[in-house]
Length: 123
Image (cartoon, rainbow, N blue to C red; front, side, top):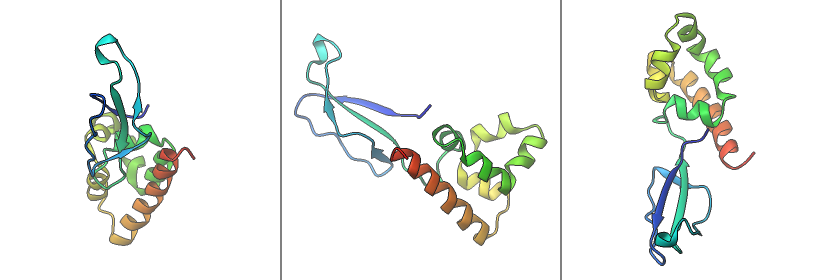
């Protein structure tokens, strides 16, 4: 399940663009009810960054879990705190918690970003 932001805008209104969101589909006209006829809907998901919550990353690209296991997620599971820790961690927090060196951090971020962006582009 991907987390999405849905917003409706009056016909002819220009939706705002935010740096932290990337449009997944072009804004399209749709009708929800007689009250919202012609309203526009913008669907967006979070861009990849080190500030992405691990839950969002894993919901969007479950195969990222296998990579995270190699960098310390396995230890969190073995310690029995996965359900407590993971929902509260961002990727940056995970990197800090696992005390990854700069080279490891760069490798991890690069691998995860590639997978995440492929998922978003439909690959």
